[in-house]
Length: 403
Image (cartoon, rainbow, N blue to C red; front, side, top):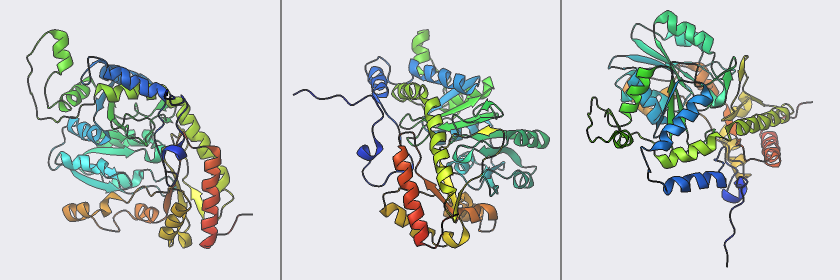
């Protein structure tokens, strides 16, 4: 009996993901599978031509001069910090609301992360807090494009120039977004990306750093390859066996298999981001009729990539967020929370002496936020189901309907 091929359309989330509708997931079709199979049948499984091809295509998409592929988004952050020559005693100011890897990468290089508070409307880094925590020891500031919305890069570039520090972007949420018409990835000295399955495109695991600086790109390329000055593909092309380790690096390479998937995914990114915006618009319209909950504010002069759709509960409902969270999951809605402020994690409290009260806006937001399901494969009907479940659960916990 012949086996039927998987349809070319994106596989339905509810069929492939039993249990609650997830907050995010990958979209994989036959083109992606064929690209990976072609790479598997090629002569190069790693350090081969697809790595350079993916880097070139990615750089062109974000209008950056250089792009360097790495094993994951954390490796991209680590490599970017390394390229800035971070030393023990150097400080890097990062927003309190981000994934822990943003701050961890500073620690990997021997530096000290300093936490800035966020704007309560957007949860992007607050420029006044950022400046107040910039000192003579600050080597860099990091902009985190939280949920897929770009920061105010004009203000951040001005601050970085005035204080003589480097500006780095953690753009892992924001591939496909723009600020004043310029793509995320071309807005800071170094920009980092993640290709985890819930991100705008996936390579399974993977990351990227983009920059205009040739020397920074070269240093990141060495760092991902043990600090060695050439890789196997380069030596094969040149007919040479010689190589030199010129600094201490890591094995942070991304394979040709991952890059083949990335190339295939990148071709679909524009329409996926447009779909994410359609879904966000549908949520915006529906939530305008619900009391006790509101989406984050969108700032001017930018387009949003909507990696996450985050809402804030009003104070009386936030006190019952755990019950609301569980009730939604019981109704098949896989809500999540992004993120616990990094300075409240045990490691940072014990190692760096951080404590509650350091970033009050971030701490207050953490108690009130929920992430609703949003990914390109979610249907309008599934979005409506999420909204209906949210409305029911909020009403059960004391919210009314807006008139």
